[in-house]
Length: 200
Image (cartoon, rainbow, N blue to C red; front, top):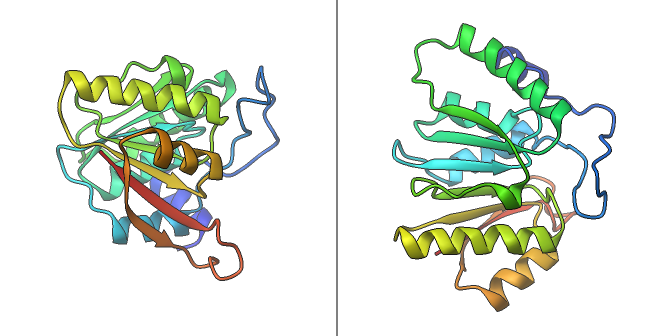
């Protein structure tokens, strides 16, 4: 399906619009939704189960959370710091819930900075599409690891269009190990067009 067809199916609007000015542009990147074609490929190569809970850092208008909720049994949390984006995601949530009534309401959006999100014991999959600087990424990963120390479980980090500094940090300063690389359609001319899954 094309981008607009997915939005129509889900009764949401998640397309890219004008750039959003964040308080500190060095640390936070503008909104850019994950292409639906990427989400299709991820779905074919990565299983989500009913007891999984995905956290999308920099959720924007909520494309990934809605897609996961509709096509998978997992729960999903969208974390977004920008007020305007949060408002759009809540409008989308209202529209989505009015039309998708047969599924349990296991989708939620939280207005906060990623580094301030309190990792919950049931959170076990964390999605990143380069939402912020490596400094913020390190803080988030440390919070995840602290949570795992308290509540033992397997956790995955899913990185789309992975930042080289993210990769260096994970492979040289954490216990996360690369378990899967998913090369996307345009990988042959853009090596960043891939998904990396790290696991602990």
